[in-house]
Picture: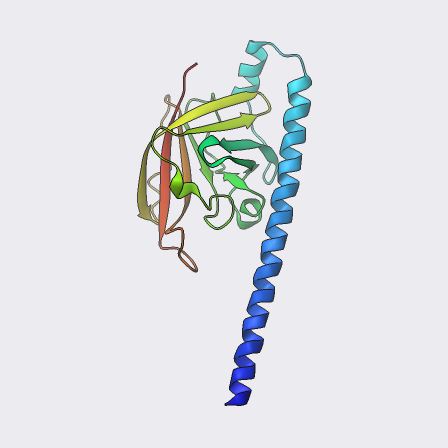
Length: 196
């Protein structure tokens, strides 16, 4: 019985060590992506460009996979999160992933951003209808207002679809937020552009 107790303790310590390592690695990757995103925005904002040039840059924006492209601000959560191109595990380790194949602001279609519920979107369930999201990219800042949310099956891909010529921001994460392991569902937020 004593040997079994020692074995359980060793397994528990090993699991804690692996979890701790993964947490520290994720924090470091997210911090690095945020630094890259801030540098990108700072550099692009110092360049003098006309409205027409910014609009053209927005329409042609097509970053490389894994590249930090901007920042997602959620004022109601006081959150500032790096946006990275791609939604593979390595990309999501760095921050909020932009779903490749979906649009970016000013491209007149659906924009899909995804993140882990236990890292960047830990408090996403606290966002309410009417709350705002700000997507900061090298060519400008774009504001969206939450209009709806829903919960779908984890395998449901029907939420990713063209909305052209209308722009729509869709934010997704695993659900339930407190679930341990691979969550069975997805929490979806829909937001519309805020016109100045």
